[in-house]
Image (cartoon, one colour):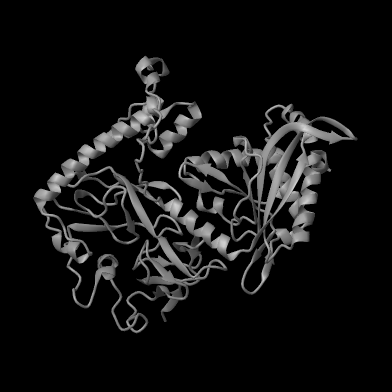
Length: 528
């Protein structure tokens, strides 16, 4: 007898899941332990294994589509078994029917039935590229209407709330329609593009999707204007060095070799820099003109307004910080540290070959050890309980071009200075290149934000929920201090601890800061 498999609850906060990829298709044999699909939760992407043997008779969720926990995910049974009663009286959809349903279903209304999609046409929807993504913005189109497209070609670069990602075509054909203009956001699952045979009329599909297609003459004019604008934009971006179009692999190799991408000529689509361009780059060929093509200072006329569309990352940052600020009752504790011993300890640590420890690494290690002594600070508030976490995972805030990312050093208290240093530097580099993985930014239990490198003496931060606290670290300042009744030159650093009063009382926060102060002022105590 066929068995219904429902969308599992893969995390404590999961309310719905998205099938990122099916590993079995309808009609495939399934054995216990086989991976059925990869499911994206609110925290990570996890592989979901079958617990039964049989044949996959039905897929209840299409790739890229979300469904609530406990809804039908799949049905497994004997080959040819009738499962119409299990799926609500309808017959199981074939692969082709299922694919068409995934495109048509969101567009069906009582007033206007879904338009039939020809076999030679593929409708591509705005993909869900992260667990928190609600809409995406096309940063640049790599293919214009009328261009031939092959499987694997990059159609566009799409900005999510976390990164800019290249989106590849899975089909061959001609790009018949662009559903999203460059730099304009569009909801997940709305029409991104239509690919098919040249000359195919897709106006009915477009209008049924909620947009009226432009006449062909207008499309041609828009294409020409778009191409002209893209050329101008590319020239401006190349000269200003604000954005260089390059593949992720090319960026990585260029960074490792210390090559400035602005000095590399791309041979890919629309001048995109690819791997071979970096490998064939000759520094000796650099000209005087290239050197003078530095980013010019941007000057605005008096009274001139500049309108900058909100990126997906900026929107999510705004939403989450507002929720934190207005739901968690913040209070702040401040302390000033004597950094003379820490400065000397860092010099000794870095005297060891192949060792490079920063003051921030010392702070992160000290925070982790202090949390082990004060578990109430390493906690999360929920409506029904307070969770004091057994693991100590420190989130380290990293400023990126369009906002802030917080990669997480897991089990920080169990790691050495050098391990923390290597991990933080790796995360920071990949954060700026938008190459962090989802699980590298999850499960933090405490956060650290450091603006000392910018000369900021003290500041306060908004708590990175679900953490209960965040530590703000200022610059080390040389100034007169009193020691043993004498005024001498000393080095000090200010810390500010933002606490959620629902979980951390004032005395608890103060005791944590005193322990932290002891560790940082005397780093040798962390080695005992």
